[in-house]
Length: 414
Image 1 (tube, rainbow, N blue to C red):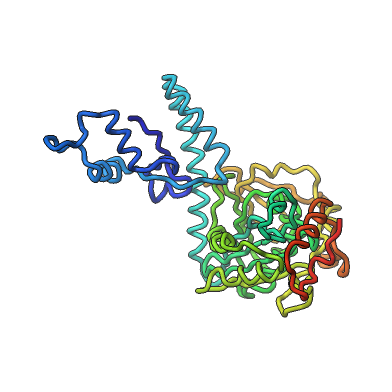
Image 2 (spheres, one colour):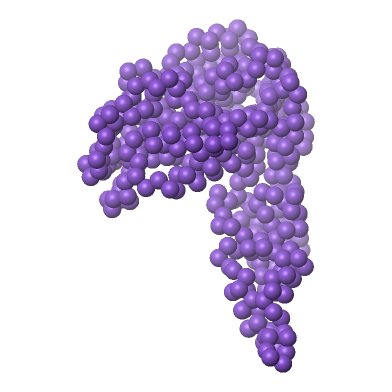
């Protein structure tokens, strides 16, 4: 019997020799296959053979193999390496297999370096602050369970989470797709708001961790980091993970929310989702913010802070270079001198110039542009949503009883 175990996707540093097999397997099935392959070891009255408990003992402790969990959000490169290495092994191409394994090992070391950076960032002094942020998987409205809903579009609800790595205090910013987009304007506006309201005044060094999504790794968010350095910080360090290995503390917070989400079978009001987020972590409840407008059943203010989005794209576009090679950036540091430094390999110092701004830009240009940026959306208007989403939402809501105070859907239009 031959198994094809795999190492852990995230915890190789702690379990460097631990291996896992497919979640579709079970120990009892493996034991039965083992006996079919080795019938002479089948336990009988006259032959003690290989008992099930002994099989499990050897599998767990001698070979250090466990049953894995269903996997999602897998790394493209990891899966490609696994496929190519398996093919090379089956076809006895040993030289190619060794080369692929070396390349895979370098890829894993890069992923582990990001996790090392996260762990080190938790040990900060009083003048340093470490923050990770990311978007959660979208919520949807309405959620009713009726048959036609499975084939219909929904209204997407976004949640951008910020988490202090040292204290694990987390802020969740929830808003629907007809309030604001999911773009650099939103991320930059909320990053500025967070630093102004949640980062202590005595902090001089800011460490940021986020994934490689277009809303985080782009020139407008970088320009906001430079602005924050000009205003108050001595240095900002922004670190990005290897794609497919971006598990961060904020993802554990999202997992608590997702666990409760699975228990909801009918959601026809925004308050169901906002209340769920608030009670997802009873020991240290998440703090909630809204974006643009109150995300409430009747659209009225419930004293939850509401952040307005500024149009930093229009304000900064004349000062930024159009073509930047930023996809390979692993880390970038900002200081008040307008010369961001980058590293394209994990473990290397940030010593390469990133020409983010045009040559004629000045400190005052950046400060004035961001300080005087206009709001991205008019206060009393709502963004259009896809026709299919608007139609299906109103159609599905006809099949359920919606409380009278839920006027949230009245402003939904294509």
